[in-house]
Length: 204
Image (cartoon, rainbow, N blue to C red; front, side, top):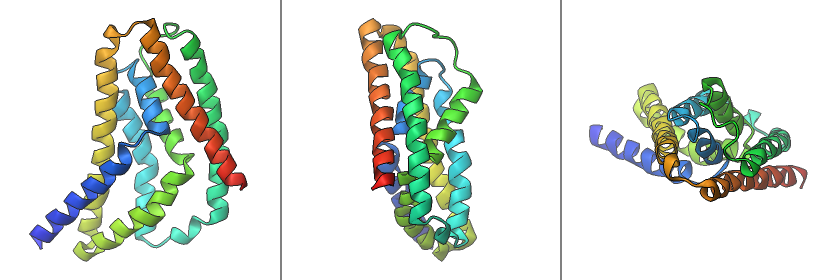
């Protein structure tokens, strides 16, 4: 069973990283917040986990019926509006990337991770499809298997977000104004595009 469990956990890491490393709202805010704090990625991952862990437990105990199409549409619409707001705030940084470049507050990074997670309907969709399958497979190894799945998945989030945030923070001294505008412009476009996409998807 130990070999089977190890193989299962390796598959969890592989599947998790394939989703974690895809550019999206969380990645965009990790880059933006990482510019101001080397621990921003850690705090964003903690905010992400504050939504993800309860969701994993809900799925494990069979509450997937709560995440109906209507609920996902509501989340998508409200989430889209929030991302548009965050994108517009980011636009101010694009215009003046050196303004207000002070150390990022821990509260801000944590909330950014929490907001970009709970307002993403595709995050919930991933968990009630792909994630739910992983959770069902973990039940073969009992509750301990589920806990190991949850921990392994979140550690993938933590590792990637921490790496991105830390690398942005350490490399920022080599950025000129043009590079900063390009990076923050990417974050702005990412948030706006996902915001519009979420809203349109919710209305269709």
